[in-house]
Image (cartoon, rainbow, N blue to C red; front, side, top):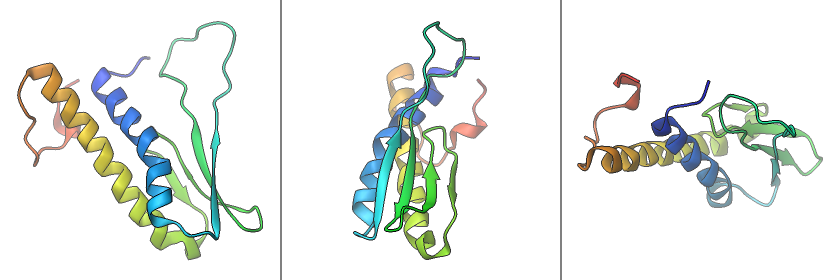
Length: 121
C-alpha cells in the first residue's frame, strides 16, 4: 500500500533531518552510515524504499538506528542522551514537513497545536 502524500512529506523531512541531527548532537566518538534499500528490477507496490541510518561507535558496534518512517532504536545507554535529542529534532522536522504539506494542500497554515495522527486519511 502506498502512503498518503502527507505521510510521505513527513518521511522526506525525517530522511533529510537524520544526518543533520547527527552532525548537530553527536561527537567524534560515533559514525553514521546510510544503508540504501535493496531495490528489485521490477516495480513493487508499497511505500517508497528509503535508506536506514545506522550509528556505530569507534569499535564498529551498532549502537542506534533510524528509519525515515519514524522507527528508531538505541542499543547503547551511553548514546541515549544524544539519541533522545536526535529523535526530538527528527520528529520536529517531520511535523514541519507535515505542516508544509497541509499548507500546500489547503492553501492555509495548519494549526501548530494539532497532531497529524488525529486527521482522517
